[in-house]
Image (cartoon, rainbow, N blue to C red):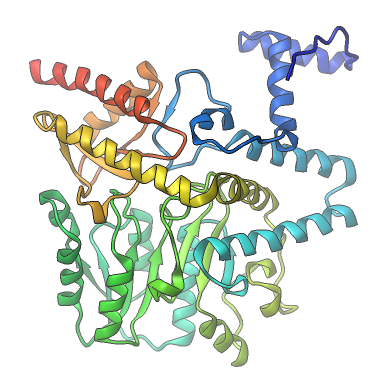
Length: 448
């Protein structure tokens, strides 16, 4: 590989004027701008070379020294993903979006996306329904349940006290049932083992329980033993419908919906799968799809492409949400095929163990909020500083970390704490840097 100097290039004067204005506003040279633009635009065509997680930062277009610990909110998009989107938009402008060429490409991307999601979840492609995010996917699950099942206000929905606010609103709006929340937060706070969690769910079951709703990875961090929880619930009552929120799970832990035994599993593509927002997906067990179809029931959807071609009718209308589908396919290819999802997940697990070790070494000033038991650890981890108690203080801490140290993470309200999300693109040096600056902050708080 060698660099070749470009001595001249012909550019429209109006565009040249805007390029100069753009570069001046951002304090960069024109040559640097051209280099960065071409790097992004051509990245999908560049040879990847041998996969190596040690070269992870080269997959991203970050500023120097930036550390992204906030994948649980929005995953960083690899340069190839951004380039693939730009390439598609370029072709849209060149060939027109409704041209036969572009329609054929989009139909192929849709089929690939559905198959990729099915493979990631251990499902069949026809069992995958599209939505715009995880919450709407889970809402779709409840709408299907209400069509196929007669529920009473006396019936009970079993969930936890660790569900996301958007999910809690969803449960209130869509279920119309009594909600029984398994108290996991106190258990997490004092430290817990897997068997304790399973026993809590078993004890919470009663004759009126009709739906189980849990997060594979709670927003607070850790992970639930969903296989065992579903099993114990089904053993108590095999008719209980099991709905799982997998928003943080896709891309960082192994998912096999058939092994789990759940009826519905919702995911989004923009967190640990490193896609772009506006693509959610719902796994629906085939027996429910067949029941809807055979009974002549209309699927509770508005876009025809939400269901696979097997279940489409002429009644649904809509346009394929192209950009997030194309972005997900490229991100999936990078994570699942190029690096190998097993290696990515092993790397995340290794980083999580290291992060927890560092936290426990600083037990005088730091405390674990999410579980530290090996069976319950994920790449989503929450910790607290012993002398910081309010959400506003943690918000200030997160702002200080980003503005002064280029470390991006998230403050949580319930309970007040700081959350980090570890992906394959960070390393132990990044974690060490985080604890060094956190120790600096904690020392100031204790001396105040």
